[in-house]
Image 1 (tube, rainbow, N blue to C red):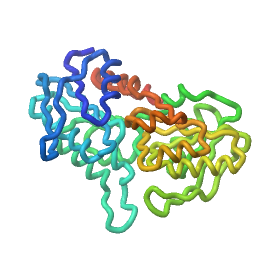
Image 2 (cartoon, rainbow, N blue to C red; image 1 turned 60 degrees about the vertical axis):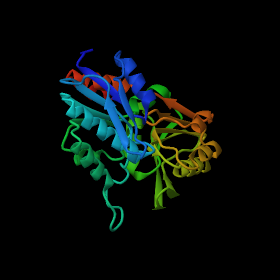
Image 3 (cartoon, rainbow, N blue to C red; image 1 turned 90 degrees about the horizontal axis):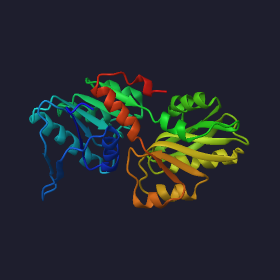
Length: 311
């Protein structure tokens, strides 16, 4: 690996950053990322970055605002220390669900966050499973958008009874990609949302009777929609229901809902670290994205194509 590459980690997901650095066989860069007494973020890079390519690994998970500020302040520190290029590796891009005006007098916060990232001097963004791919257009810098599909493909097995299910109309493309790989059926749940974090299952499109269903989604927040979708599938005669979720936000009553749901397994990635309660839940299985991100960063650093990672 070229010695000009250096990786720093914020506080949002240090375990994933450590795994990525280990895959690349380089140590994490030394940095102080903490707070002053009044709560302001304090950053000090502990090693020379002059003329080097700096990669900052930081998900914008809870507390999202604080972790976003950590990322842009670290980028500013690297830029002022004469880094050649600064790349933000944000496995989970927070505020992605606020990518449009969903009601009068509401912001487009995903665009605001994109502007903030660019204003800090970041040259490139590497992220995974954006809520909608159109968010890439909010940036005027290169965006490498990775997908969790290779991880789920290697975990789940082909079966004659397998059906991939999208929990809403917006996730059909994601579900279709998995269904195409497994050469199996596709079903769609017509979900209506009256207010944030609340939804009602209205109708199931597709045949799931006597089938093993995999619900595929990008984000699971309070798990209300997922639990209702699993119940609806079982009511329609499904044999079993599992979930494949890219970003396990799991806030509020999510763990309890997953535990009490019809799901037999909840499979997620480590784009967001699991809480202690989530790790104790027997239904939750976490898969690491470290190798995928490691491969992507190596290719980006060597100016190679990353399209082969999109199987």
